[in-house]
Amino acid sequence: MLTLKIRFFGLIFWLGILVGNAQSFDKKYFKTILDSLTSDSFAGRGYVEDGMMNAGMYLQNEFQKNGVKAFSENYEQTFTFPINVIKESKLKINGSELKYGIDFIVKPSSQSVSESKLPFYIVDTQHYIESFQSKEKTRAFIVKDAELQKRKNIILPPLPTVVDSIQKYYKQWANIYEKDDNTSRAIFRFTSDKLIASLSQRQSPVSEFIISDKYYTKKLRINSFSVESEFHSDFEAKNIIGYIEGKNNDSIVVISAHYDHLGKVGQTIFPGASDNASGTAMMMTLMNYFSQYQPKYKTVFMAFAAEEAGILGADYYVNHPLFPLSKIKFLVNLDIMGAGDKGIQVVNGKIFTKEFEKLIEINSKNDYLREVKIRGESCNSDHCPFFLNGVPSFFIYTLGGKGFYHDPNDTVENLDLSYSEKVYNLLRDFIEKL
View: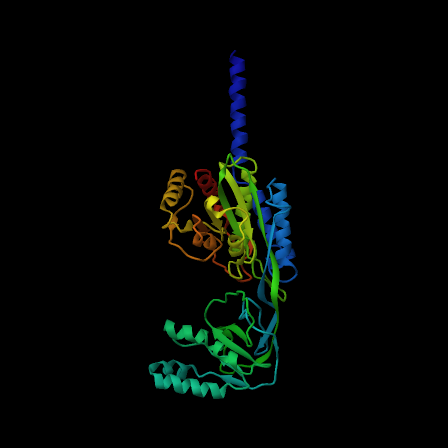
């Protein structure tokens, strides 16, 4: 009898270990997804070399491996939108070839332009600043500037002021030249701001280079420059969507993340490791878990495209839902999951206080993260279209790390993944207790 009891409790012990291991964070799977999405083969998951399309196909394959069901014959929800694609850009100043994304970027709406023999007009920044003293001075500056800039390349030197309102106008100053003849000319704006690349759904009739101010000198020589851009009026992208049956299928929990990024300009890739390969990898790791342990509610996984172009994939879904939005009990959107040393931020925490308090309770009980910070509503990720249509939702992102954002240095190597397991555990526990 004693031997049987020992064997019985031994079996229970080993089953407990097996279940515990199965429920733990699958670091290998998380890292595999992260490394794959940031690999050169996906070209920054953007608009050249079929980067976004290939990343979507990769995720579909992972959905299938995890036994996730599709709402139709496949996981795809296809939509189109306009986008201006910067395919290549080069700039040489004072004999040095500048690196795209590090030393300079171009305004995402820029049209194609190549080096010309047009003269250069340098905006007088001191007179620009003084022009804000009165309406008369403002008018005089604008009239003079309008005359001096005609048929010339324009240089906007670094602005020697800390007045935010004046800086704001200066950053938009290039827009006033759109109405003029911009054939073969460009604008060169030097700035101390961090260079943050982005996307545009329009193409403007002017090209603007945004350059680190360390390259501005009194003996400035712009040796050569070029932009190759291509406007697509109906670029095709795909949301990837599937679900796992729950113990209760009357209500739905949604876990979402956008898998797209900025893509590639010339030979410069924007890997988008933190934003948002990390969020997609976290979503996929939760999918992997719930494929083994049936969730309480039907759980839908939404990998959105074209977030970087204006939250377009999520917006399209809300206007073309695969099931009534009213069935969604809660949506958890994951964007920027590549840190955690300073905790997490919860957008909409001030709106959905009951759910936020549940997050706080779980975190305090298990001592997962340093802090769970609360924030009000903000339309800054894929949760937004859902929230605006009455869906209870959180947008959760990690705090800390090196802070590389929309630049070529947002790589896996620059992430701090030592907190990924704790973030995962908190998210898993929260979703299970909804």
